[in-house]
Structures are given as C-alpha cells and as structure tokens.
Length: 161
Image 1 (tube, helix red, strand yellow):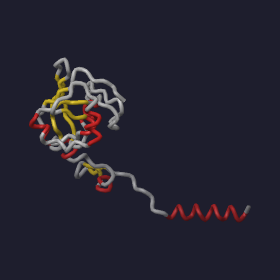
Image 2 (cartoon, one colour):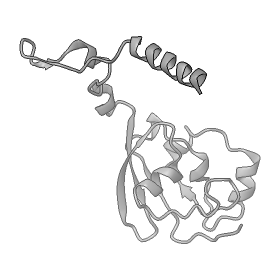
Image 3 (spheres, helix red, strand yellow):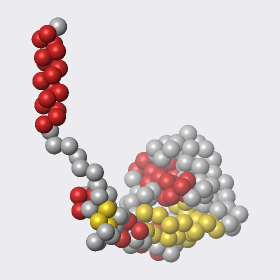
C-alpha cells in the first residue's frame, strides 16, 4: 500500500512541474486577444468565402422548371443535384449501377466532358430518352467549363438496377 501511495505521489509531483496553459488575456492596447490565442483561433481566410472555385449552372427538369445551383469544382453533378433538392434519382447512390441520374448536356459542354467509360456506356444504353449528348450525373465532375451551362434532366427515368 505504501509503495502504491509513493508511486501516486511521484506522478502527482511530476504533473505539478509540467507547464500549465496560461489563460488568454484581452489586450486593451491592441483590442484583440493576446498573440498566444491567435494560434488557437483564427478567422477563416478570404478564400473560405471566395467563389473562385465555385461554378454556377442550371438544371432544367422534364417539366421545364429551372433550378440555378452553385457547386464546388470536383463534385459530381449527382451530388450537386441532391444538395440542391433537384429531383435526380441516382438510385444506386452513384455507384454506376443504374441509369437514373441520366442528364442531357449542351453540345459545347458535352465536348469538354471526360471520356466516357465502357461501363457508363453500358448503363446509358438502358436510359430513357437517350441522346448524343447524354451522360450519367454520377460520373461527371463539375469543372469551370460548366459555368453558365444548362443541363437537362429527362422527364422520365427508369430504375433499371
């Protein structure tokens, strides 16, 4: 018991010798939190509020209703649609196992899209209302080239999983 008590006292003594954090002080000279605090709390940079990496475009559904959205570069069009309450099903969750996120692009935008994979072509063959500029929204990342585009959602999509 005595050995255990000695061990506990030794640990407590070591802890007491460790430097303790100092309370943050408000500087009346600079009217700001002391410099030590600036390492702990920083205001977001201007870039956090910047629209430099944002792309704005329009989804048009089969009934002609338009929804203007703003997206980050690199997001998939399926994710952008879901985040903005645009009705684009995506039954497989973006796993390239259905054709319910079928979109129709303007020719100028379609020509800038990444090359279509064989798997995407196979799924598109099952899509309703297929056109020469059709792609699956789950396979298309947002790029700067899409800024100002209008992308059409066919008025009917079959869930062929």
